[in-house]
Length: 184
Image (spheres, rainbow, N blue to C red):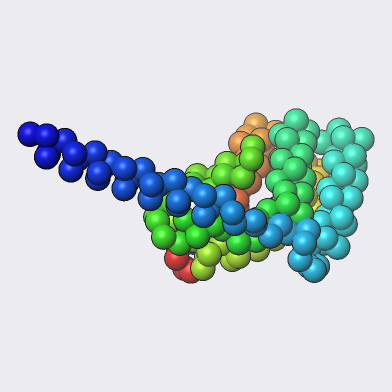
């Protein structure tokens, strides 16, 4: 019986040692952030942000419906757009390539896409798709709300906010999933 206990103890020590070595290895990896790389996304985000702000201002001044929904969408696009254009990790730790992980986390930012495994093959494509969507959304959503609101459609005054929200959520997650699966 004492042989079995010492054998189990040795296995536990080896397992713990491997876990500690793995944790230390992953902790030593310093990720390259987007602001370290030379990129055109810095120049694309600024005008998108400015256009989105002007569009929100014009929608508000002309009394367009669903300003609270439009404001929420544009502010979310601005916050997440800034993260993805300036601060996102450009390369995932090796852990993502070695395991099937569908959760990305970086500080306070968390992204969980069930059925999609993040890795270094699909991550650059996912980042690009999210950047494009968020920057274009800051421009397109205020224009869209302004144009539809001026038409005076009954549908828009009753369900416009739900339509805007559905377009935003589908436009955000469908490209992530499609691009991620393509390069997975």
